Length: 437
Ligand code: SF4
Image (cartoon, rainbow, N blue to C red; front, side):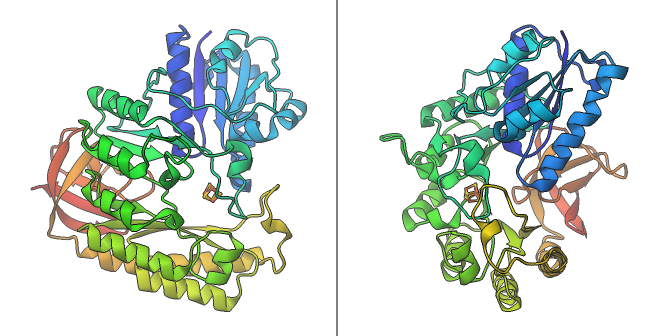
């Protein structure tokens, strides 16, 4: 039975997809590039927020049509949506033949093997699965970077976030196992390892004798992986010891520090365990310690109780810190979290207007910061052919994480999957244009 897999959601989900494809390939199931040609369709879903759930359900329904018009004989749904709403999906979507949560990925081989029948999956399965360096993994994207999941779950309990409910408590992979995986990826030609988890700075805490995130970064610096990029760094976990290790570690000068807000009342009600003043200090300390650092953040607007004054404090905070990159999201009430019961819910139109104001402010800051790059020379990792037909290739500087930051459009001949020196000749919105230096 041949298989096609569709991935939705975040890089952590992409890792799960690559692991499932690796296991299926090893078990002898051929993969096909087009959903129309597949006998078994797998959708690896996301359930992070309302919009993601809607996209997941729409994709399932769309692919289910191929059971009538295409070659598809079985439709399997995996990922966060099924981890969270497994029973409902089986009940309400009869098109679905089998489901699997995020808890036991290796069962995908069994499920595809039995795909013609409908199979149960226990919603009560604890979200305990964490892969290791020996799990076969098929790198699907033709890009020189790969995501590496270093831990799973989260113990932080932010009042707007449902992730701990379906990804479970924080647990880390052993340091030596991650080092082995990153070495293996480097040997396969991968040039950049992007370390992901729900709470990256909490890495190693529950593994006595394993070392912490600083130790992991120092150890990864000894591998042959050229670029190492840790993501999702909760500001509450930063201390001087960590910054000192960060400074010594061979990682890209890039800090992904989701602040979520800049008003202390809102931060407290979000249960972020950090104040705006402390986050200012943290960014300053990292900038002092690491020359040429690019700082990215994420902001959530429209959280219950966000008054106009609180929102203005957020704008002041952002104007003051001047993040190089920023993603802004509007609050959506998540089932099973405390915040939907909070008083002073903010109307959706107000939240949307506030998101637009944050974006306007950030567009100005980003433009001021990016235009300073013109005329300079930077190391660029050439990701491959450009999505913009005006350029043959595109790549990224160390200050640009894949898929969320801009790219460098490259003029002239470059070799995909390799590093090159590029002179930045132009800025186009959030993108740069470079030519061989
Ligand atoms: S730290 Fe991140 S994953 Fe954990 S509860 Fe907060 S927002 Fe959710």
